[in-house]
Length: 102
Length: 102
Image (tube, rainbow over all chains, first blue to last red; front, side, top):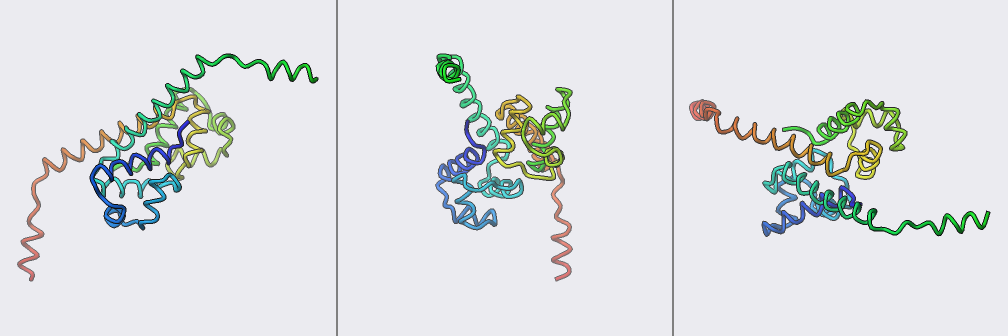
């Protein structure tokens, strides 16, 4: 399953790159250090609610749009995980081995 | 504009109450202290990505569903804020007063 901060980071990074803008540009607009923004984009830091709102403002992307895109990414991963569960062969071998060992 | 952790907290709390479940039930399922879960629900603590995933698991609600609902709440607030901006009377008086004072 994806990790929320990774997905948020990728969505923010994609939005910035689609606008052809630099980390420096967004970090100064959002009043956050360039290093911190970079860590948020790479999923290495959890952005606080306020910081995320500032970054969305600096990108001129509504928070609802970022969250919707992150939600869609999770939905796609959840569907894949459902398919994997439905199509996987029940793995009973370790159970049997365990009972033999007992 | 809403604050992300408040909206997440309310969505989690609504999901729990709709299931008729207690803080104790969800906190033990998510392996988080009852006090911490309560603070997250009230928007007093930012939940880490991992903690939010655990709470969603304990509630048996997909992360995508929680995020979608939070996104919808922001979208509604953003629409209201757009309407407010479009219908507000341009407030030029302070500007004029300022120029008179200068």
